[in-house]
Length: 256
Ligand SMILES: NC(=O)c1ccc[n+]([C@@H]2O[C@H](COP(=O)([O-])OP(=O)(O)OC[C@H]3O[C@@H](n4cnc5c(N)ncnc54)[C@H](O)[C@@H]3O)[C@@H](O)[C@H]2O)c1
Image 1 (tube, rainbow, N blue to C red):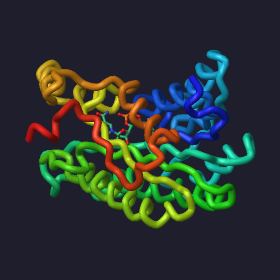
Image 2: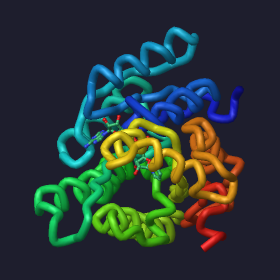
Image 3: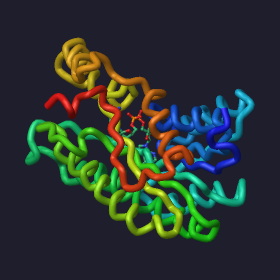
């Protein structure tokens, strides 16, 4: 129950799915959590749930791809609790497209802005405080799709592959300041993001069955299973883990 006792944590995209599971688990483990989401009502609902459980959380609305918002969400942690120890840069979006030439330019920009630039902006805002206070931890939500290509996810593949390399570059530079940077890389996980992909497919039942059969483990992950990987990377238990892409994909990438 105390793996993050009194650590101040920002989780972006925490109004839903994996981010929500991270915010809840990190608070259960003693963290003081800023629940951030572009959907302010969702963030407030998750923060209220955490407080109702007797744990500490505040909600912040913002867009991780806007520099002023990224600064504001980090400042919210510092204003409330005096410091920021852990950032889980998790907010992400996806676009499915038959072929790259059919992808509208604004969709390209949106996915890159949220998934890649968002990680840069939130880190940029948090690192000065972490350096000031002697260290910190940044955990990015990567993806198995940062390692393998999906023909219908070109910009998502590009964003997650880019994010993994951003993470590595930051990791080897920032460790001298006692800031550890890593990514956890989920496989298919049962969240609203994946559910909307299932719902929007031509045959949702078939698509759902395909996702269940995707990995050798024979099912999708729960958001909570992914949150436990993020918790390990955020806690002192992973003190020698630096610049790592930590896969939790039910064996999928090992099977291809
Ligand atoms: N679900 C999966 O199978 C899967 C697999 C691999 C990686 N991921 C990654 O996990 C992360 C979370 O995905 P999820 O499946 O929980 O999705 P989700 O849609 O359930 O949650 C994402 C949250 O991010 C928020 N968000 C979107 N744009 C934002 C922005 N600009 N600023 C702030 N918040 C924003 C959304 O409102 C939503 O609450 C993403 O980075 C995603 O790429 C998911």
